[in-house]
Length: 541
Figure 1 (tube, helix red, strand yellow):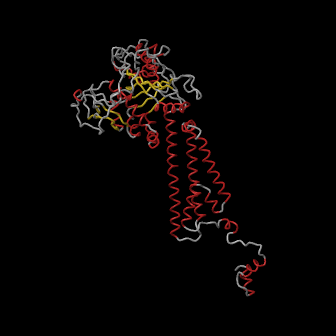
Figure 2: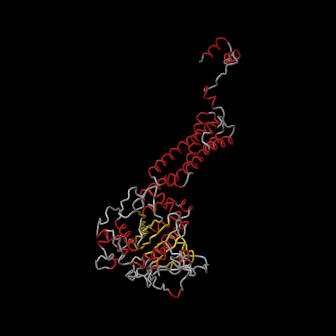
Figure 3: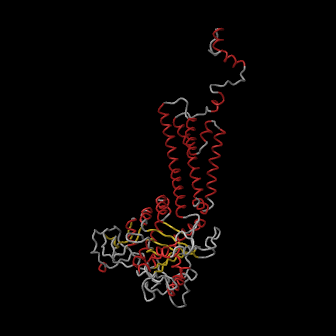
């Protein structure tokens, strides 16, 4: 029993009369209720279910406001200031330009640290939402209101967690992809000198990137680069000229200052008795075997050797390479959601002309064909009753289709799949220190004009005995076309991919698909509507 109860029992006064008497005698004193000062601060609560739900939601979207309304002023002000400061800092950092965003994305350590930070922030935010609700809900409420309130808190946490978890996934995939594709320290014997973060192109107005398609497969030793395309990119505008070399080109030249020129002064010929080992596409696998370490320290001797072969043959420096293993090519296309191309004649699926193995099906002709990864792979590599030059044309059209498919919406919605696919099959010697500038250059390439030169059989070019002086002159003419002479029409120095990849079907009577052992594999499309003004030129022929 308390002292007040005992005194009341002895004096006959009712319980609580002493408190009332003290209050009447000293009206200036404010008596504290149960819980003391802490309870006084938390008296501002919602008056009903609707008010509770509304104030809790406000506290979730603007952290700290729930504490302020509930009377936790210092804590609420601290949380609100931290939240506003964090938002302002992020807007300031990433709002200053694309460079900052790329610097962040291409720094794996920073990306992983940020991932941990946002996960911790998510946990703290969820705690703030929950405690704000507890402070704001009425003391007396039906059980149904408690259930509804708890459900709202759970829903808010889930809604807030989804983008954060997705961002964490993007961040971790980005960090892994950067480390896999862009090693921090690249050992290469052929990358340009004088490259710095401040001057990524070493003072040059063009950067030349060798695009290689590695076609490793059954019955082959290692990878053969059946796709060899040099992309010469104007660094300020993104305008690009692509030079396509046939895989079976003989006598590839090496620069005079290359150790490989001393070994092959008359062009690449191994003397092994098999012409297949003397082709351009065999250099990648054969040089490291025949002459290991000849070019010095290198993470990829085969790529360095092909770079020098293309440089010596075309007479322009080759700065970097980008190799895509065609075994995983379809994974990249599927990650992009497919590509759209024009198919002008049936393209074989499977089949081997040399061994007499017929195709199992065909990609049928039609405009704006939407191809998944499997069909895109065979569109790019199908060779049954089709020569290397037709395949080279399709490969360039495939590259253009991939560039077109890589729009911002697709990259954002399929980002994780694209990065996962890319890091497994893409190899390059582009150093990480200029990766930001390289990404920006690729964005300019997407918006710039792309033209191409194909070295196909003609009176000037033969893959079995190339005229390298003529080839080098054709390259210079495409890169730096001379002004037209007065009174004479301008001569096109390169092809326009929009023209050469347009729908222009071959007469059906000129091809035969009767050797197929399986059913044709058509892809539905709309009726053609070709542009009658399109004109294709061929500078190489």
